[in-house]
Amino acid sequence: MNSVQEPANPPFILSVSKDRSEPVEGRINLLDFDRKGLTAFFVGLGEKSFRATQLMKWIYSEGVEDFDAMSNFSKSLRSYLKENCCITPPEIVLEKVASDGTCKWVMQTHCGNRIETVFIPEEGRGTLCVSSQVGCALACSFCSTAQQGFNRNLATAEIVGQLYAAQKRLGETKITNVVMMGMGEPLLNFDNVVAAMNLMMDDFAYGLSKRRVTISTSGVVPAMYRLSEVCDVSLAVSLHAVRDELRDELVPINKKYPLKELMAACRDNAKIAPRRTVTFEYVMLKGVNDSLDDARELIRLLKTVPSKVNLIPFNPFPNSPYRCSSKDTMNQFKNVLNDAGIITTIRKTRGEDIDAACGQLVGQVQDKSRRHLKLANASFDHVA
Ligand code: SAH
Image (tube, rainbow, N blue to C red; front, side, top):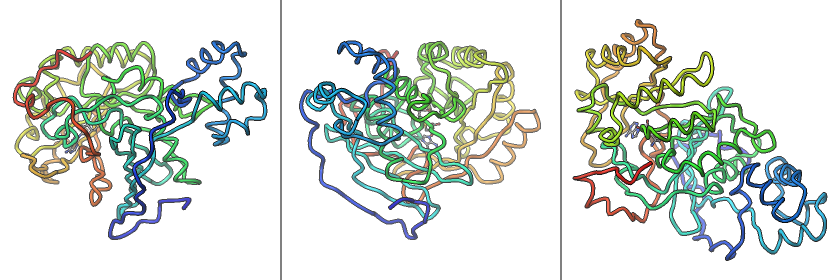
């Protein structure tokens, strides 16, 4: 199959494979390195640094995984790589295609956890929503990933590997945009996520522009400052509330990094380049955060940051205590913001019939966080 654009109705399961075997013990997964990492790797072997970009061309442009076929490498280098290295993305074990063409893949990591990756085809572009962790350590009350608990950070190979596996699966259908909006909090897996995004933007790998790679965070403030320094990608912030009291409840990391600190970090990020804007995501929860007073307070809050606002209709999941705001309420909220000069859109919900919409990704997480014990008394002293 070269394209998943043909919508299937009703949603269907295309393929389920067996649990994949462990990667060969002790091998170095070359998808784990960005260009800098690969350069250090080859120099460490006594090879010239340009081997890094040669290898990247083989992997990402030619799709070659067989070291024997890498004809510009010496025989001894090829046999070293063959014995000691591998090119192993996570394996797609399940595919579901929604009636609107949105495609969700369940990908299996080597330790048997399952994460989810979503492809959203649109006119003129195709967006891949990538996961950064197995589960999530934050406990946002309106997000179903949060209910799964947390197992571990994904390796760089498992993050960029979602793009690798998805693009291979899609064939001619090009992935033009990546959003780090799948399972997990990307800024709590800083180094691996940055290396993966470097590959997404590297001309020798995927060559996506910084406008087409977006990281979304619930507000890990120290990591936001670090990000501004090392990696120029588009920033989205999951705001969801305009007062600390409510945000503490919806996005509990707010207790550690309250709105004032969060907005200062956003201002810092906006300074990276002229005309840069920060996108604020705001989930619309009926009777909770959707009043016109909230909209006016939002305008006040965003005054000092060049911003766009993306209103997200709440996507329900089993036992969730919330309901989505009505269409009228969302439109009124949007109009108030637009009238104040803040570009505001309502996110089109995609892939709802296969549970692929925002906040519906659950994967299969062997929770190590003892979430059920912690939920009542969440503390974030371990973060950042
Ligand atoms: N942890 C990161 C990445 C997740 S991105 C973050 O918080 O930004 C996923 C986006 O979908 C976030 O804005 C998240 O708050 C939002 N979301 C989570 N659950 C949702 C739900 N049930 N309905 C709609 N949006 C949801």
